[in-house]
Length: 247
Image (cartoon, rainbow, N blue to C red):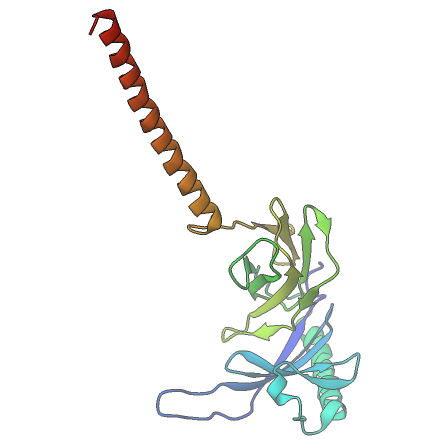
């Protein structure tokens, strides 16, 4: 990337702060425009959780939390697009003013984990988290056994953090099978090269169950048979010794 050619303009608006005795709600409207993909983003976040986001392709607000499906944003898509247009004008001003100044780049921290405890053959969700990166331009891909996956994948919008860095989640619906190796491939300009995190399912052996009981019974029967055999062998030797001595 050439220095000074990529910029991001971020707008944060505090919607309201609901003060309580022991807790403060942090409600934000987040809007950013930038060079690169995505070129614009808008959402509403409450205490770090996304409530609404604007789908610019569908030109409508989408509720991330189902309870807010019946709600709407004042001004709707037209109002948000107007704000985006103003932000893009500001972006051009900053580009002209700070031409030659490099935009900061912070590499993401990457983690990969299942949503619930893994059981063979039981559907699950594999989560890939990229955290603390800037600017908000990142690519995340899932692979299984070195083959790219395209189905059953959902990637969230960009969530802003208190330090103005971002995080993003990618979800993969999968069914664990022994021997499968999954990976999350991440590309970001803060990384010297693309990063890959691997995950392989490990299911602990059951501590109890029908198989364990059967094995225990088999072991017990084997021990009893061995003891009986030893007793019979001893008695047979005693009988032969008695015959040899004419008893």
